[in-house]
Length: 271
Ligand code: KIV
Image (tube, rainbow, N blue to C red; front, side, top):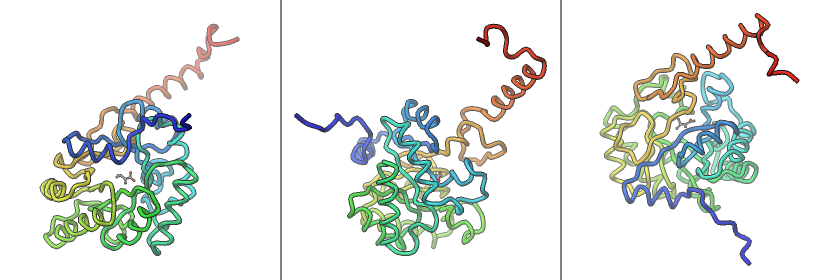
């Protein structure tokens, strides 16, 4: 008798098949159990436990402060809330840039302690050795090029990257290096749509765009932005499907009014 359960979860192989047959890949972030259950049942293919948690969950200005332990906490909660989506977890700033052994150890901790299915690293050629080492240990790796928020103090702004030829050329080289190093997919953040479309055609693995146009093999958004929880954040690339900040704000206002006026709870809402 087989001890293996039937696996219905999305795998990196399924994502590759989706690219091959031209089916787009839908990705959202999630950072906690409740949101993961909704996002998973909504049908996304991948849930990214992004280090954007540093901003949207913890209120920091950048992704830099979040720690490996905190990422593992978020990832563990998300994995518990997920049945179908592949769960990818960001290696946070400072947990892999030192050397490839440090990168491997951080990736192993994420996989072992959270039960996630893959990790994501920012950077090109400079992280190729780390990617190779992590992939050799059996851990799928997603790359991340273009605007890489862990380098925000090097860039200085969150504006569109690779508009200049030299940076576009480096990105074209980097994506090939990441593919050769064994990445199963690469996120392209905030680069011109024409460049994203060109590099998508130049490699075999799927590209996932955020602010990179429609020529990518899939799209990712930060879920809190997409449901309108991050008030005042309205970059051009963001399609906001709900206005949850105002909805929740109104609901909270009604609750406060009902408590203050004494009309909550009523007779049916008590024992
Ligand atoms: O941390 C994150 O949410 C990300 C996405 C924006 C791609 O890296």
